[in-house]
Image (cartoon, rainbow, N blue to C red; front, side, top):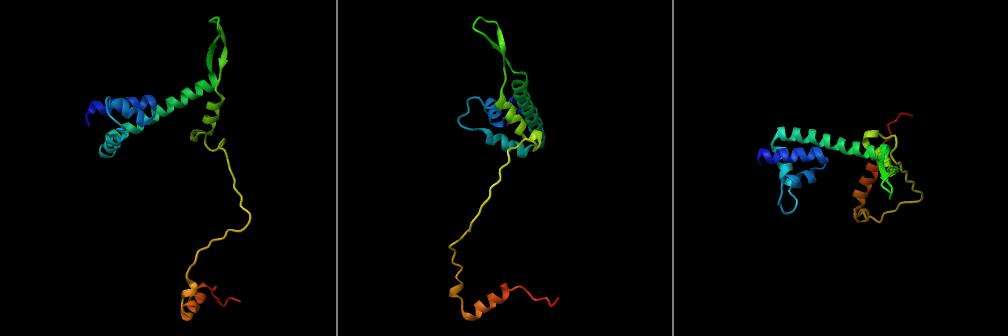
Length: 150
């Protein structure tokens, strides 16, 4: 892989924060997904791997920053007359930001599942097919030990 192609990938990764999109940008004319060759190069070249991680972080922060801007600062809404008509904010982006790993677990949806009743299985362990001597041995193995501590 050429140094130029790697650099195009790294620049695109820093721009988008998505390796698949960066691979497409770095591989014009490629048919199908070309991300595998970049993953191979990442494992082969430690400098490329380091640049990948740094670019990914830059891209991720860029995306988070844009989501924050849309959620908190909003976009200006222009009326039919061409004059500013207020701002539009994104509550759904704000919810995603609050639930993201970068906010810790403070706003993560929590789910709890309770089960009442019995759980049964129809698993034949073949114990009935054991000889009487082997069944007795199994019974002894499964009995709690008497440690004589009384």
